[in-house]
Every structure is written in C-alpha cells, then in structure tokens.
Image: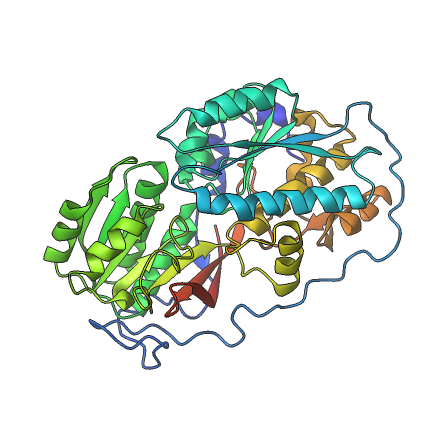
Length: 451
C-alpha cells in the first residue's frame, strides 16, 4: 500500500527502484542494418522500415467484463466524487482535446451506468488548458479547485502541467495526466498526488531511436520544441539512436510561439541526415512543407505523439506518404472506438483517449477502495487497484470484485497500467503508425516495454 506519509520527495524511491527499459518486441533490435523486408513506403535515402505486424491495429478482444448486476456499495458518501478535466481545446495541442475529453466522458458515463461511486453519481467539470503561451491553465485550475474537485485529469502538455502541478497537489487534489511524458514528473515533490497513464519518454524515446536505426538510418537530424516535453524526448531519442550505432548530426531548437522555422530546417538539411525526427506540436504544419519542399522524402520523416495527427486538410495528397510516428499506448480497439464515437461522432483521432478513460476508472476504483472521495485518500489506493489482484478491464467488473471484498488489478484501454511508487506506469505499449497518401495515419506495429 502507498503510504502518503512517506511519499515526498519521490526521488529517493526512484533511486531505489532504478530505471531500466527492456523492450520485448522484435522489431526494434537496435541494428543499423536496413531491413530486407520494407514497408509499403519504398526505400528512400537508405530508409526501409520493417513490414507492418500481422493484424496491426486490429480490434483484438478484451478480457471478460461484467455482465451481471453490480452489487450496491456497502459505504455511501455525502460528498459525491467530482472530477475536473484540464485538457486542450485551444493552443498547439488542441487536436488532442477531443479524444481525451471523449475518453473522460465515456469513463464517467460507464461509471454512472454502473451506479456511480459509493452510492452516488460522479460528475465532471471540463476546462481548457490552452498551452504555455497563455495563462489559461492557471485560470482553469483555480476555477476547478474552487468547485471542490477531488482530482484534475490533465494537462496534456508536460509544459502546461509544470505550471499548475504545485497549485493542484498543494491543494490536496490529485493531478492525473493521460498524456504527460516528461521524465521530470517521476521525481517531482508532489506529495504523492501526481499520477499518469502515459509512460515517461524514456520509453517512447528508446522505441523511436531504435526504430529509426532498424529502418536503416545511420544519421539523424532533429527539430525540437524547446520545452520540457521536447527536450526530454530529444534526449532519450538521441541516447537510444546512438546506442544503436547511429549518429545525431543536427539538433535545432525552437520556442513555443515561434512561427518561422526556415533557419532550423536549413541547418538540419545541410547536415544531410538519413532521417529527420520532428519533436514538435502542431508546428509540424509549418515545418513539414519546408522540409519536403527542399527534396526530403516523407519516408525520411519520423514524428512523435505531439504531432502524429490527421493532416488530410492541411497538406496536398502524398505529402506525408510513408512518414512514420510514435504514440504511447496500445492501438485503440474497434469496440472502444465505437463507444468513443457514440460520445463524440466528430472524432478523427484517438490519441490518449484510452489513457483518459483509464484515468477516470482508476480514480473511481481507488475512491471505492478508499471508501472516500477525498483526494489524498484516493491517491493512497491508486497503486493498489492497478496491480496484484484479480484482473478486470472496466469499472463495472472491477467495482463488483471490490464490493465482494477482493483485490483487483485493473488493465485498461491504454494497456496494463501497473503504477510505480512514483505514479508512473511501469509497463506500456508504444504504437508505431505510417502515413497514407491522404495524410492520415494507420497502425503498423506496437512495441511493449518496461521501465
């Protein structure tokens, strides 16, 4: 059990745990030798990535879920569980807002369909996080805390979370991000109140760095957003790529709010890399045309979760055909997509929807386990409901087991979750996607790793 009295600082616990990423998949072996079996994108500048995995992105089945009536809670609460969301509807990550908000709303719906938490329905208040160019997140956080929320789901941006984490956790409220990947949060002095379902960029960086080497790249150039997310991911991509025998020949930074990227693009192209990694948010809309306009083939481009998005309305057909990107989390299953579309029929992206849905379920289940809707009490049970007990995959099944006096191990839509003492997932999937002629992307393989 997670003892809050021993929760801060977490750095000591991290040292005891140690960090070692063990990739268990076969595609990212770290070899710099081009694969003999290329993907649908033809080899360009020595780039030939492995063929898609069999059944990549298929709607694989989940473990059995609850089909019978949910027993009533033996404990009721006079203070119903209230959640807040701090997710982007404006700013450079606004494309992530719709799937994340849909994931939260689907989770709330299913919890309430099963009778709610501690005998009362759960409610949610949504607020915009904006991005680091504005003060929207601080204003939204103040409003959420003023409404008495027990937990805030968000922000998506690591940079934005850094501006509000002390405000949220200092109020005794859980901050639970579905998309923060900066390694900095692992050792943050958050009094045990910061949690996330997205894995640290130690994992995404290792997967992307190894994957570029597996695709045959021997040299890489990077264009990087100069914030906690961008530079943290840059560091881990570089370490993995160089460990695989490659060389990073150019690293060009830009700041949030910049609108001109010609200098960075020219310097990276002048270094003549085999591949270019774009570690950005929606600045990719401006950067990609500059790169491809200078003769770089899309098959040389590797993107990340901050910019792997639908560009069908932004670029001419074929602009990104063969480019690849990584997004933490397992591929969204068909049945889950249909549930999300019932919540928001306009959805085009599903990035971090599973992580957002899982955040709601884990908070609700930890509240049931704690028999309390107080943030610090819920935080003390989050690790318990993620590991070591009977497997279950949705709120109804899991809360039924809890109310029968059983220990549970929640495995969600984003993967197995399983928290460390630092509030990080200790194991996760990273999905690899390839762009099609219409500038939308499809899954080609996923890598599983442990931290």
